[in-house]
Image 1: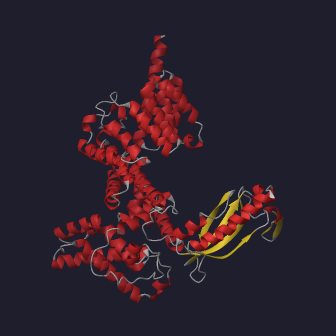
Image 2: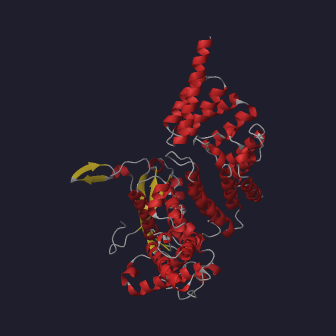
Image 3: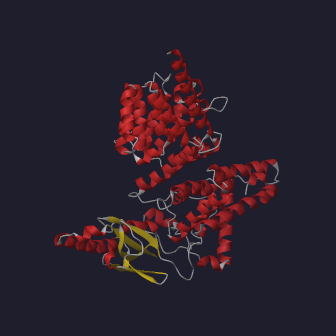
Length: 442
Length: 118
């Protein structure tokens, strides 16, 4: 349901759309604490937005739309709980009473909490959105489902739109979301922010989901368009929310820094024909320098730790690129050093591959090719198109044209995004032409 | 409280070649686990240890065959039934299960009156 599509007068429709974007997570999160059931809470929250059309048209937009919507949704939830006895037979989502948070005591058995204790009409407590995020991104859920649930429940994106974002049929996405919700209920995944001991692991799972959401938008998996701006914006909003709600967590700042420093280059990544432009050839004047400055600020803060985390280090690498006036002016030694640090916290063949690509500029393609060929055998890289593209590029720069063409073809076979395919195809044609020219010249 | 089953999956060959001293240490580890579950506020309501899969007999469609129902590198070899507050609590307990040669699966028990999750 999209409140913006209602026939309400302009002012009300705008206020509703705004309240949907900014307050949805608050309203839903506060309502879940009454219902203990995600589906029922979603329905009550949607009803509150529908109620608002009539009420706000009649009496004007309230001073605090979020509080109005929360109160209305919770009242509807309480009415339902009183009316529908069957709801009580459902296994409720474990909801902690508010008092338990302060004392840190374990959850009580009072799972049905009818909200009397805190139904003072006030908006949700600040960490309600956080509970919702941690529940949606619980490590016991499938990673793809975590991102989908986050979009659906935290961002309030309708299921058909979530399906479109991930380019899967609507029925598939609906089933994926339903399965995850069922597991939350049946396996009793608690609706709670994790304890201090669990926070690092659980936060990483949330940050990874937000990062995956951004990456999905940054390079749409298939289709002609390279970037899906809306998904990137959602991810940025979530990263900002996390920084705001968890001010002590440096990795949240690292993620926000990374997203900003990457998103700042968006205008230069695709040319007027929609073709992919590599970092090397991007017009750096088109980069969003205000965003870069903000990204660097979060990055510097995220690095103020004895052992910076993976997002802080990736942000630092993105920052090293963003501050270089030209591609050749990049401080490649620093980039390689940052990748070395990243390998100590996140040992993975993909990180090694990226390090090798940087090393090619610091010490030349020959040194890098040795590493790339050594790690190319890793099963995790065999179906990774960028591994073949990096190897192809190194071979090209070493003048080993035939091998380069073969490697580009391997990358092409594994790539579904239109803009990326065009780029690889273009590279192959260039190399084939140069081969012909060379043969004719000889 | 919700009931969960912790299923233990391990490479059984490791147990077959085990010295008596090592087996003693395994038993001690399970004893310590029981104590730890109580300390964490959980309850062990049941459990069992199985003989190796070489002793198993399967029946599929009425036909009797030698061996386990599902062949796998890590075989189902034992289980605990526990009561925990929620999945986080159950996972906290399950992480402590002594499984030096494999791992565990955690699953909620069904309320048969409510039926399976669709």
